[in-house]
Length: 461
Ligand code: NAD
Image (tube, helix red, strand yellow):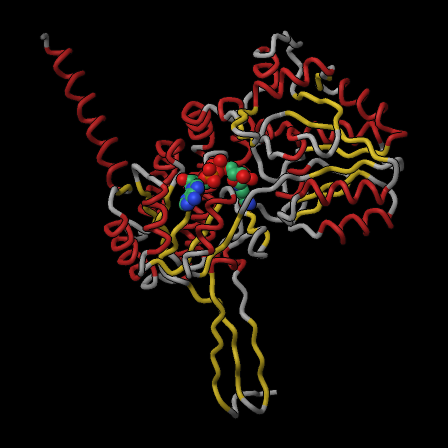
């Protein structure tokens, strides 16, 4: 080997060592070890001032934006799901709109009886379980809120998104370190299994659980006997009545339903439309990049994306989060390059309408009255109480639909992602605690209430 080759080999070895040591440094095989180290970091965090904590959180947000593209590419490569350009938007949104330290509020009463405060206190070490459909954005969003609230966190990433999740954790630690924060405040588990996730949730030193994922996970978290946030599945219906701006409704629905190829739990998953405007809606959906399936094509699609076993159906995970054109190609349809969604007409009992597909596919159910539309939407939302959307200009309908569906998120006359503050007001989160009722989580959700009382004579009023 000549000199140059030796030098190149040495540098490469050092880089690999560095990469491994950093990733290894913030990820652990052992749940005990991770929780123990996060526990030490938690105590160190509480030696810092709130101003220092704020600096750390702000730096994490900056790193989220800086590494958004790198992480988005990694996620799509590792999981095979979603769209890079939309994942980049999510990371930018997190950097801009995730509530930090400033969002923690204190309530005070003063008077002859003295001073009483209700402050927000931290929990300690939080065990956070994250989904494959939105791995790195959830890690960032959770870490920001949890640290702002004064906690440490151990993540159990989804096994199929472990590499990118651990990379996100590494980037978060770089931010913490650069602002003089404690080592190991945010850790990840590696080689995660369901057993290991349960071990984390049941660990005696884990004080709170944040469970973002499907029904199995949420049930398991709620059985743990700990304070748990259940951010579970959704199957959001979108209802269109005859008073809506149909052209705009068609575009909005497609924009929402195709964002990240329909992976978000809040995204429109099926359309319910009043019969007299159904054809017009379908026409405008086709104008906006929807491919309309005929009967024969519908059954081919069903055979492709669902796997039947003894009368029950499971998703063919190969097609979750895939581009519409890839799905169409696999049923023998060569679609135009601007096709971004697949639509078909059906009824509310169709498995492809009832199931949360997480693919850019929308079943369209025709109804003959607002009351029927609301009834069908309620049935399809399946009691998740997660998200429901509508396009209507009738205030009575808007009110009734919202009251009956009673979901954590309700978007009127806009794409579903407006709920996350994208192009709209309000903060962002990717952990929507639909099952346990906290709704869109923020730093405050990761705190507990603490009342402090100082007796008598302090009021100067
Ligand atoms: P998933 O349920 O397969 O996995 C989520 C996490 O839970 C993973 O880390 C997995 O390892 C773990 N897990 C799964 N089953 C478990 C069990 N029985 N016990 C313990 N741990 C378990 O979900 P996914 O496919 O990665 O994500 C998609 C699902 O998550 C969809 O249903 C979607 O609606 C939901 N989701 C909800 C929110 C929300 O904020 N409400 C956000 C994102 C995704």
